[in-house]
Every structure is written in C-alpha cells, then in structure tokens.
View 1 (cartoon, rainbow, N blue to C red):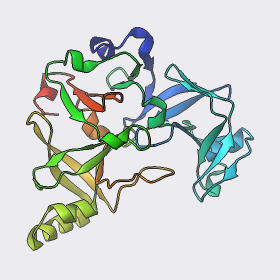
View 2 (cartoon, one colour):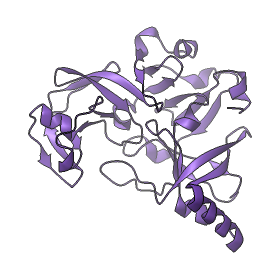
View 3 (tube, helix red, strand yellow):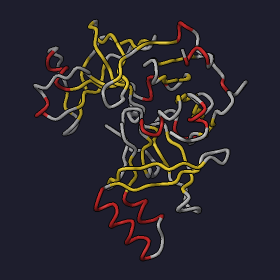
View 4 (cartoon, one colour):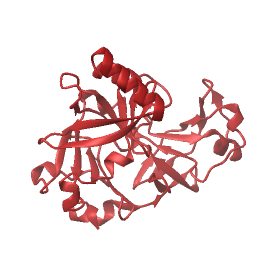
Length: 283
C-alpha cells in the first residue's frame, strides 16, 4: 500500500473506484443515502450535487443561475469527514432535471483543504490526514512544488511552473484531479511563443489537432514534456471568480506519473515516485 509507505495511517486511508478515464470516485453518505462522489480539486466548493439527483430525491432547490442553485441537505460524510451545513450547491441546467448519473456530485477543494490529501492511483485509494508532514523526511526522488498563497480557502489548488518555451513567463496551473487530459489556454500559447512565425506555427498546430506539446520545468531541474489540449480559456468550476489568471490545468495524465499528495496546511504539492522509471521522468 503506497499511502501507508509514505506515512498515512490505516484509519486515514479510504478506498474508492476508478473510472475508465482515471478519475477517482469515493463512497459517501448524503442526506442519509449511500452515494458515489467524484474527487475534484478544480471545484472551489466543498460539495456539489447534480441537479438530476436532487430532483430524484424531491429536494426543493432555489435557482441562482443558469447552471447552479442551492438545495437543503441534512448533512454529508465522506473520506472520514462530515459536513454539517444545511444547504448544498446543485449544479446543472433545467435540461438536466431528469438525468441521474452513477456519481451524484463532487467533493471539492474546500472539503479537504485543512489536511494532507494523497491519491494512490495503483490501489485506487485516497488518504486524508490531519497529522502527516512529508517535509520532515522527504522520500528519495520526491518533487516538492509550492502552491500559490491564495489557493487554500477560496480557490482551487493552483501553482506556477516554468515552460522552456517561455523562460520569462511562468504559466499558472490548477491541479485538476477530475480532468483526464491536461489543458492550456490559447491565450497562453499566443503569449508564450513570441515572434510572428513562432506564434503562427503554434496556432496552426493547435488548430490542426487542438493539442500542443509543452516542456515543463519542475523544481530540482527535472524537465519533462507534456501534451496539452488547447482551450480558449481556463476558469474555476461552478461559482465565484478565481481572483487571478490561470493558464491551464494539470490533469491525471500529468499527476499519475507520480502519486500526488497535496499538503494544504503547508501550501505544498508533493509528487512522490511510484518507481524508478517515474523518478527519471520516463512516464
């Protein structure tokens, strides 16, 4: 068990399921019913429920916008934690009223952000610890990346990395644990690849395949290539504003090269090696 190897106690480890696209689903109790929730650090909320599930449970809901509203809910629990709030955000348009999925909602960053969150993609387990401090004895080959100071209480988990194609421009990324493929904004590619011909090549490549290759520089000198899907812009999910620009999202194709551990109290993302190949950046 990787999580135990890196210091999580048995009582802090919770087993889930993995969708075919790599996303982690965890069991939960919402309003007394056993359900499945998606782990999503791109979501700035603590918990959201799909509108179709809220309707299926006959919860009254108050529409706050085209895509979201609120509904009363009598508590929720997941990953060894409980939520006592009497309202929950519901997400979906009116066209979604009759759609109920196998996962009925998402756990967001505010549900886990006072602890250390670890994801073991091998055994499909999630660790959530109030005690663990990986910085006391860093594992061999571990990569430590600082989170942005503004990331803890109001916005998704966000960090800066360097791009070899733009040494003076540090792209800002959201760590997105519910996104199978990493994305980068078209605005960033236009800004980073300076010069008319460089921009033209980047634009043509993006228009042909909607993908570009980026060379990311991680702390400690590790450089690795990452293919990213080009999107027009990147915004935090559901409600609220991020308060700062974001250039892309690091999805599961990036994160699962290692075992990702987000240490919220110490504003740190740890990438812990799964094996020797990963330490050398070969995956």
